[in-house]
Image (cartoon, rainbow, N blue to C red; front, side):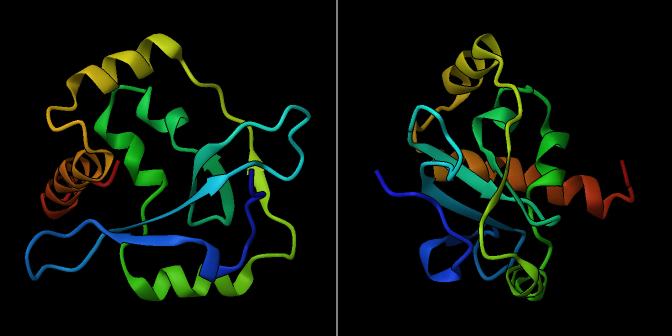
Length: 134
């Protein structure tokens, strides 16, 4: 089990755009939180505020607006955030609703988490294009 880091080389930046369209971007890293008492591997996402969180804490919420907190509108914002990160990753331990997570997993038609994230991003773009600033 590998401990997550704040090194951009250890993270994966996913372009959730479709076709030639760029962004939004999701930054992920799979590993163990540095302060875990019982090491368990999670897929973490980097939020624009510089905190890492378990992706499942957002997926289980059952509302598309949850992605707004974990995506970056541009690559420039991703680079800026990595430039401000401290040496040790700051991990927020947010609750994961197991029932909500099971519901989210069941709704994923393809079974591919990246495709699910892209579908989620399409909803994000539509909300922000339409002037919805929630």
